[in-house]
Image (cartoon, rainbow, N blue to C red; front, side):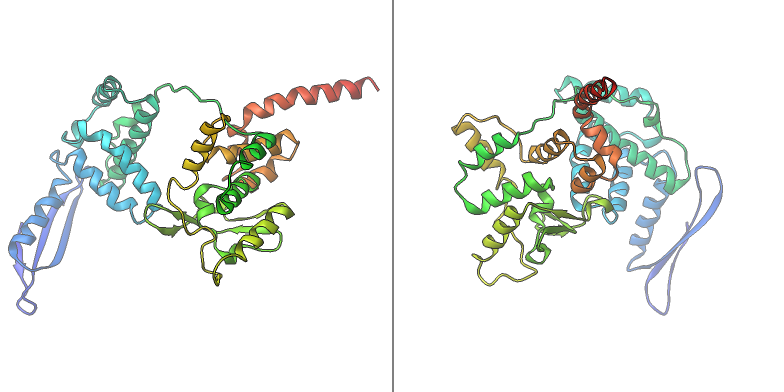
Length: 343
């Protein structure tokens, strides 16, 4: 392919003639190279995408370049973590990867002790890589479509009753941590949403959830979905506790974070140590969110209200997540109907 030097700018440009996966001809022009060598290297890299020489590793890098500017930083980081499991096959030419290749890779993952859940997540990343490649280069090769998900055991959801939560809270001496646990339990918000709360997000009767906070990058980030932007009404006592806590801070400004002294283990360590020390039922920080939902469901609160408080994308997500609890309530519905029928 020809390369040219611009006499005015002294920079190099290249003209690349190529055919896509459907055999249709195209011309690609790229300017601004300092040397002819750089122009030639760009040409080789570009053309490799339209031959069988492109490897899964190259396609993976393109995929992450694309999503890194479109998805939340924490989401991209999570996908990169699962993509590490693709190292076993990423040297293979993309068009040479077949459904059998993927099945062999999954079997290898099982043999080295990876769980089916982890393998499924890694396979989803692999699907995304092929899907992106199909979009960018107008091909239809996506062998992951033929692969069914591996079976996984659905773990029983852990939660605390109100009495269990109050028992735990009695052992938490740090007022800042105590307040954080209260907001998680009575608000049902996500951990990242808790860390993202600023003084200006606190109102008379509610907290305004409008962002999250990534404690790894130490940056604010968007909420999980559009529905996650919400106003969560809190009990009067909890709002009083929040205002009392703010009054102890040194010159708090509206942009200051409510809980600024946080790490990824800030609350989880407290939870684990306290449960072990006092022989309490062990749960995770995220299970306080489940505890909130369970408390509301068991007290007959409408699923639409619960879905809004949790910031789920739709009520179906809430129903699917807590379907076992609604099955239990069906017995109560039958008992009520029996009573009404006998009136």
